[in-house]
Amino acid sequence: MPSTPDRTLPARRAAYWRVTRRLTALLLTAWFVVSFGVIFLARELSGITLFGWPVSFYMAAQGTILIYVLIVGFYAWRMQRLDRKFIRDGGDAE
Image 1 (cartoon, helix red, strand yellow):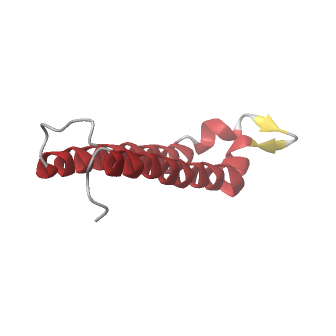
Image 2: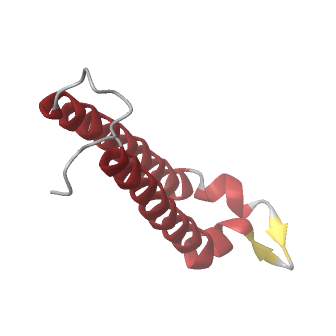
């Protein structure tokens, strides 16, 4: 039984897509900040060393890739929860 019987299917779909677009925009912003930030701050990061290597090297070689994987994993996890909630609340599975 839907938890919000007064809401119509189009209204639930609109709410679903609003949350989806907001999540996508947030994660794309994080992706941009990480990508641009490492390049923009490369000189400052090269002054900090980690095990004898500059931090900018670690971020360019491995750090940004790990952050991208975390972004994709978070998106998949959050969208799965959102899809389940939408279906449970009476939305269709389209």
